[in-house]
Length: 351
Ligand code: SF4
Image (tube, rainbow, N blue to C red; front, side):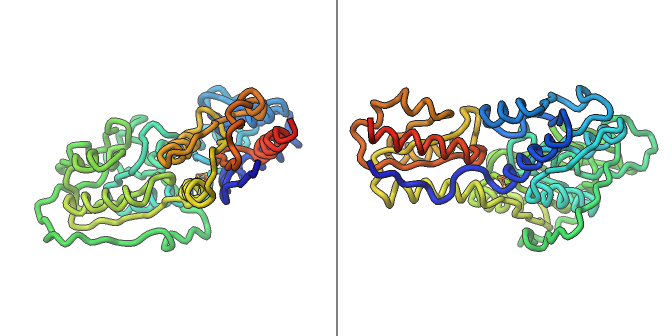
């Protein structure tokens, strides 16, 4: 049986960096906390938990004086402030690509852009970016929902690399609503008020697709920022829709190549190597692994999705009629699991 590995497989840069930092921190601390799972891979989480990782559902569970690592998805600034206020040692392992999106959201909201985030409003990365949007409030009458968040862009952030301006061809609409920190209606008179729109801050909203982008109200200036895992094709389409909603559109292409590279690698694997099937290694809850499965199946190729190497021997019949096998893995699959799976597949040849 011939075995061919996808060119890009396993941990992306951001996940690898965060997991390595957790492993390092565990050498010097009996316990290290994360808020939410650091990675969608139960085997890797179990390995880290055995070394002392503790996973909290929210920051209030973490004891004062503890050590916390912010995972690659990032967190809202308010969460980090709360942790620091309780004397918790915070090590920020937000992926630099996510950090760029956070910094763009902070800067452009400060420059009075209405922020449209393209992505999944329930995803922690989107919640973290929303939590960096700055809302000015002159009323002096703030509650939890009207707090100002002053984000400081990280040093050395070359945002020019990832952004470009698109100016709508439409004539400037002199009657456009003043849109700085306005409510979801986009209408503010006199005082600048800050209200929390559904699932977002008042001067922003999250759209999942073109259909939702069509529902965005008109604003004087709009900044479109993308979740790092979005497809460029969708970002372009949403940008096209938003040009009709404003006279000034600022598009930040904050898409990370890691996801696209893994998807392109499995396409290349099934199209160019005549494989009879692909063993896909990754956690069942991993959305990016599920996407790889969909791509392989769309090409008409059989997939064996395994979370652990023992599932290879449990599915020995799947291999019986196959001469060439491809191996692929999601961005949250650790190298040691891929290696073990490869060894198990190679051993099948001798059985
Ligand atoms: S997929 Fe990209 S943005 Fe997300 S953690 Fe990995 S490298 Fe960072």
